[in-house]
Length: 187
Image 1: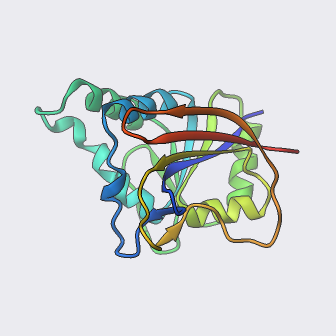
Image 2: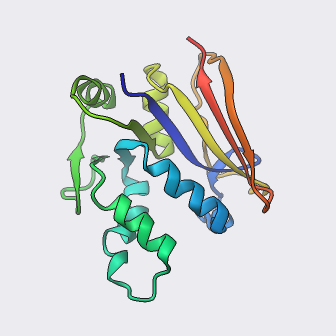
Image 3: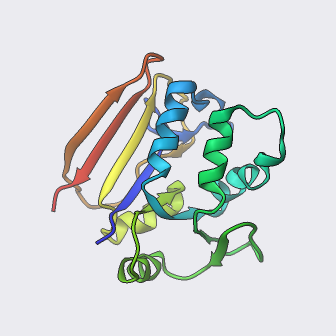
């Protein structure tokens, strides 16, 4: 069965976006970017909320820029064909290899789990992740922890009223001080 993973950059105080709406503090260095390239190889479908989808739209045409380095071209070549499902009540259309969904994320996840295929079901976006977590469907939390305190904003971890026990599966520390933490939900 495909695993459901939630993975994003996060500040040490637990936010994916600061109170000013900025996330420039999470610009990956070469090592972290290489890590993200390797991670995306294991994804079979990416479920995104509207805000993250709009942020990631850049990658739908990035390969048209002749000045891109080899790593950026490699990421783009992996991201563009990846199937994406965008959850939004305000968008009327999406671009690239994406389709729009406005229904229950749990039903979408069950549909993808039932279909033959390889790769994780990746969740992107805190609001979407909160809905999926509330349904108890996240199998792994993968955080790329940046050594910065942003003081508020959009939290990485969903705020809900139930306890979730986690098992540490993997850690990695990058030269920049960024730390990768991979936790599996204890079931």
